Length: 428
Ligand code: S3P
Image (tube, rainbow, N blue to C red; front, side, top):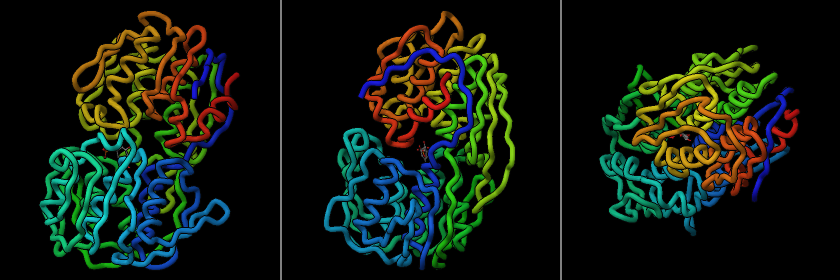
């Protein structure tokens, strides 16, 4: 699908955004492992979560949808059964990595596979800790690429110093650790999103978090919960940047999750001069939610690296758009992780924003942008089949002269199927 976008005069209105993808995956998986009836309200309705639900149903989970609410009757930590087909994770890296942990510690055989993009994403980061726990898994190219074949067995707890700040890696280990013999401890080099830790604590697991260290003692059943999934800050980010850079804009976004491990985008946009205010903050199910008000502002360039990177990793493509219209030079470093997302996001954003006239230079672990070198111009650009690249290019198109055509724009269905309608609703 192609999408044509023209320059916007202003963006005005009140919106909600897609529900949090990370929390939605976890709510489905942990509920299936709990004992009893969990209720999940406002679960993300998008392809990645359909992938997780499909796999969990193939594993025998009792999942029903009633009036947009998901009801899961969990059968406990050992309540799943051997699937009689390959588990199809679609485009979802979170589904594949988290299920690798879960399935390594079950008592049956299973195979995980994905689409072309996912089958070329590295899995060694989760295979290695699983093997240290005693797991038996195989994959293509020495175990690094899917499909993955897993012969589940009893695992032992480990102490693991993760080489990457990755919530997927730590959650994979935690899911295996729930069914292992002995304690597991995980250290991260920097703090990544902590939704799994919050959820496991709320469900009664024996988990302690002390800064960058997680301590998990197996043996306790998880108790069923009622979940209310907040709006995804990674989806809100497109509108935070759009309303900041389109002159005269004023937007209110309701019910956005503002867990501090996810709010790097707000911190950096504010540092660049954005007008972003949080209202009505409240905590629901261990997660903080707020309404966010954003009005247009002139931005200045910024240089970022280090601990903030995991706190805004998925927002870097759209942050590049903000940097393109900011006064002065901006730089993103220590973000090499971007190269192994749904596509190589460093290469993709550099090539596509380059077509729109942005002075962007590709670096090994990030990019450098000379802001406002020339006005952005409409162009024919491509999403590379990546949802976040598609939406970032749409935001760039709102401030570009003339029309922009985005090919493979249907990729937004992975995380935010109502993105185009929401954009239409607020564009003046
Ligand atoms: C996610 C963690 C991040 C993020 C991804 C979702 C999660 O990946 O980029 O979109 O839900 O755990 P990494 O764990 O690879 O950093």
